[in-house]
Length: 254
Figure 1: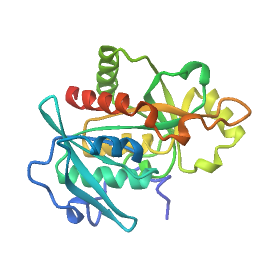
Figure 2: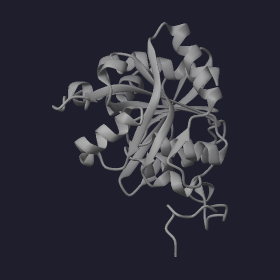
Figure 3: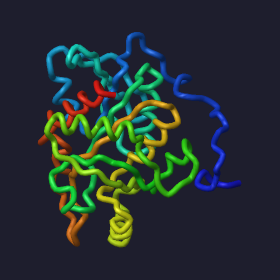
């Protein structure tokens, strides 16, 4: 029996889907935002008018789903779990609840510090060095981001006056196995960032036909011989408002 990494035909339907485990919610916002930073989520759930509208359930516990009004538009948001399988499961269940457009953002390791600097990263493709994407899209070395989503993100970044850099990201399943040789190989392939979800999210969004925008911000630095933790210790808190408001604008533009 071939593993999922060798199968080219993945059209067979699953035994059960997210709608079998997750109840659709009446009037669930069409736009849904997610990030991985608890600090950012807490900052926005403390605002007036924000209310909890649902929960995402797992053996790890409960993840609340919140609703906020931004420019007269109701938007759902929640904290994704880290790692491709958990992140994709959250996405699947949010779509089952009623989400129709999705924006995901989070931190990443920087592989090319000269290129990234303080820019927001726009992933145009992702190296599929993880497993989840192969359950949604046939095997390939990389997966490209949807050009329309990339174009919308660029337009919003320009309108907001934020500097950005476009590039390839490396999606890995193992944060503690980013070896020097692997980093060098990915840099030679043109990767400017490393993270754990992008390729899988591109795959599931394509499979479910859900418009998805993803952007990244640099946290730790892996582009030199010595690892630098940098903003990884603060988990996005420094620029929380900037990232979240950018996500809201992207959601409205989708």
